[in-house]
Length: 240
View (cartoon, rainbow, N blue to C red):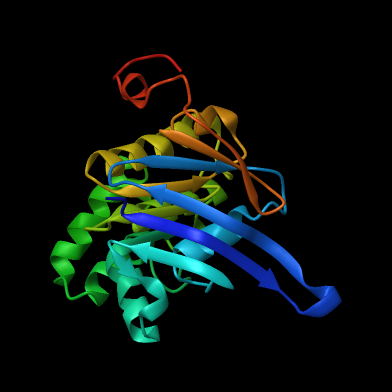
């Protein structure tokens, strides 16, 4: 059974002659352990798809289920609890808290969910180390480069027992080497059973996915299976 399902999902903004259809009759399913990349031109509905999948917006029509539970029947508090415990979200603007260090930003969701501070900090540090920025753990967001802030946001999204990872251009502020480090971290999460949806403009990074979904004008126009397997991409020492 798919962990994330969008069934006949549409999203419209405005009314009457000013109505704009951001998504139209989208069907998408993502299994545990699967990585799905979403591609398409600007304005095709990619970010709207992510915000609806992450319960940050409600569809105009259609149904979203996460872990077998219908999102549309949940209260606001239930959705907030689902986001905190189940969904890791990587925003384009990172959404880091400026008054917290990198390590504190990463560990905060775990502490909010009741994990003891020391254990949460250890988990946060491990996620930062995996992305090569453990030495920046005590720095605040305004002391970090754009690429470092991006990796802190990734670490925050994958730390803990999340089951769904949604990432909007997770490699957008990174060079190719750090972009690959981010994708390896996302793939490692998938190998732990996380379902992941990644929006990207980078065809090379999309090739790491199990499936690539192409959007245009709010419609799914194609889906493909990349020829390059993620198993080969995870082989240590292999050239990229």
